[in-house]
Amino acid sequence: MKLLYTQEFDAFCIASSDADFTLLVMQLRANGRAVYGFGERKTPGPFVNALTKPDS
Image 1 (cartoon, one colour):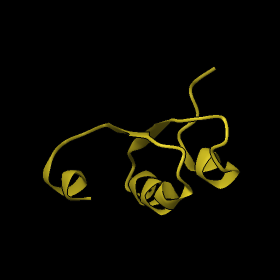
Image 2 (tube, rainbow, N blue to C red):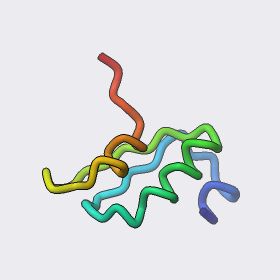
Image 3 (spheres, one colour):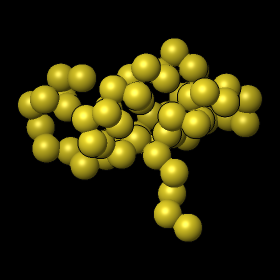
Image 4 (cartoon, rainbow, N blue to C red):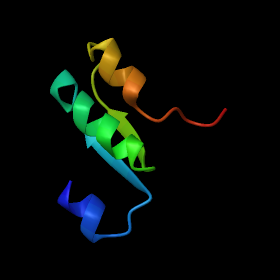
């Protein structure tokens, strides 16, 4: 969160399959940042659904 408020980033990447990052993703998205995730197929749905969707 410190990076969100001290630097000018357009997007963040989280490399994890851990649903504990869901709230972090939601906070970053609420602050207008894109958040992309990379993890295993076992990643819980709520975490996946909170991430920014790639443009089709």
